Figure 1 (cartoon, helix red, strand yellow):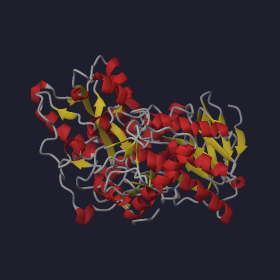
Figure 2 (cartoon, rainbow, N blue to C red):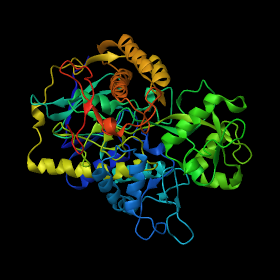
Figure 3 (cartoon, rainbow, N blue to C red):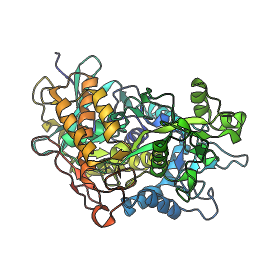
Figure 4 (cartoon, rainbow, N blue to C red):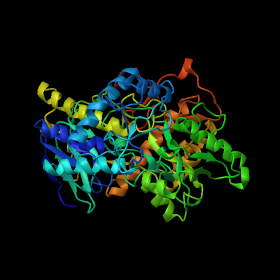
Length: 546
């Protein structure tokens, strides 16, 4: 094996989604030398798959009576008691400025005839406040804008470099990153600041809306570097993912919530409304409520259908549906479905991790020099269930705040000297022999025992299976990196899910079916012990990064 190559920067950003590119651009504008790393291509992250839009209350462009305060209230309700109110207020108050800044550098959102932004309404929102682009291609437009800005600033983006581990000083501060390319060559990036913006963990499950890169890498990197994670047990399953057969696995096409915002109705196999009498918001109830209602209805198997329901949008007509939702229309057409005349078959699938690496709203973790932003981070914004279309907003806001935090920490002299990074020998992989489970086994067991419905017996079987299925071996390929990350992330999630003896938000325990505010209105922290094993979950103090 050849010796690893080396490079240096002031800040290394891992990920090219909205949070990572926003952070990289902000840091570069403020004079930091930035390296951006991605294990795939620059366009292969989660951002471009975001359909619905950006939830934001803009001055002069909102419903009568709507306000940032109402947006905050809707977010707190959706979060089922686990949001941190200060974090929610901070992120959402910064939202209008973040969206305005994005438009200033070229983002083109959909507009009405009067030139004002078009807005839609999604689940959990009390007003039409979700701005969108290309009908249902908002993420693609956000990504296009940020990548164009990155090219204009001549940001260095290292593609096909998987992040293997975070370098640290003897005192435990971040000091860079070890990366691995597709040919098996290692590299060492020395930097006093590392920002994780690696996205989600959807591929813990057999079926997900996430692209192939969403394998929980940032969770594993942070845990091994000494950071903590919280709220990991709350995985949001999107209720309306295009159903193309019970054998379909991997990334599945999303049917955006905005279709229901335009009046589409969920019905079962017998044609009866799924959400009637379930929630005051009906089909626009929070996602955890809708997904759980679908699963309950499928258990009764009305009309002989026991693995999916239908989204009836036929009232829109073919021309209007295709113009408003071109991405969804194309996915339906590819599956032989005409939304103008046929209800769309849908089922829940893993969509968004509401928890992640514990950070402040400025992206700081408890490890000096290590930051996180976007879906990989737990800022306190989402709580037990994410409000629809708050994710792109969070990436824009916290990405920029994290970059400014890194700059401030540089200026304050509190970051480590990256020349003191501990690199054991020329073989950069030698210090990372980790537990790796075979992906099909892990995904099958997670889907069976740790999806929408859970109980003690199933979680126990899952924990035992993960322990038995894992083997310790060196990391030599990108697939090794991903499978090791999935293994560690799964074990951390199961640890928290076993501890939380209630149902709340996205965490549904059949053996503890109701929320228990007295005992469990609190976040649970998971970390690694001195031997590198997942330690028992403990309570997180609000507003902390412990």
